[in-house]
Length: 395
Ligand SMILES: C[S@@+](CC[C@H](N)C(=O)[O-])C[C@H]1O[C@@H](n2cnc3c(N)ncnc32)[C@H](O)[C@@H]1O
Image 1 (spheres, helix red, strand yellow):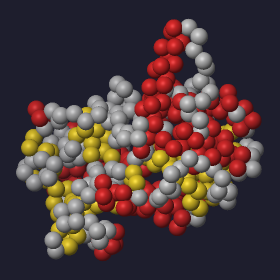
Image 2 (spheres, helix red, strand yellow):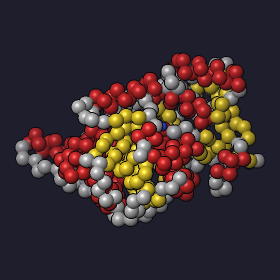
Image 3 (cartoon, rainbow, N blue to C red):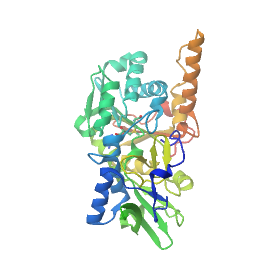
Image 4 (tube, helix red, strand yellow):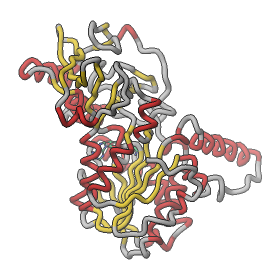
């Protein structure tokens, strides 16, 4: 995650310089890397999206399948790792949405891509404390593709009656709230480059066992998706996988809300901020700029194009219900309110730690700049408290 995945030097001992990667580095290690090289040798270069899919989700050796390590001791941390305030604010958001949807009983509370299970753990605890009326009839569930992370989630949520699924439609019909924090950025992207004479797509090829970028003419479909304002040399990412995933939630969610939180922006933002492309890797809190380095060992991620996500959601039958920064949303949900008044020095110290965690969640140049976007299905799309402080509802 962008704000907090700390940037640091790449360890040059562990990688080998590659001639044609614009990022400068590539190394082939481990079995997913061998499989990727084998595929390229058998069938020619693969799209960057296919490469990212294999590196993250190879059934035996992908990052999320086998190596994902989240939290302060892992590769990166998310809002959830900063203490219970994030889950508590989300509990208020989902309780509001439940009330707005006419308090269905029972109702589904589904987290997609739950990482270590901390968000769901904190959210349920806060819901029980602050909104027992909503908590009583909630049916929690997690949609998770990584069996490695499912194990961690079941430990975090031990003792709770919870369902797991690898795709949302097996939980259908869902009536309630589906939410996902930092999941869209993990979906594979096609990478386009504007050359002087047209739009090219980045493929991944191989030279002497090292992965290298290869540019090929982009398909008509993808060419149409690159904005005219993209300058020559500029890069643009398109994620039919993320868009398709959002669209696939629509038939499963018969009524209620979909809440998506991630780093990203609308197309105009992305063009001005991210013209050089946004794909990057993270390992041990270090930014690894070359996504071709160490496939399977890095968390690969790309900034989310919420304009495309909105288009896909609305095309699938969702109604746009609002968008704001994480900072605006958490403040509207009273993230600074409801913490006990410290009486003793040790409590004062704990309160100070909680306050600085909240400051990080609200940091306008870090986590606070993330976008929170909500879609409604057969439920009111107006009057959501979480967007009451939004300055501009772009996206
Ligand atoms: C960056 S982690 C975020 C974890 C958690 N939401 C948090 O805030 O800490 C991404 C999560 O999404 C999961 N994931 C990735 N693709 C998915 C998909 N298609 N369906 C469900 N989960 C997915 C990963 O396994 C992982 O649990």
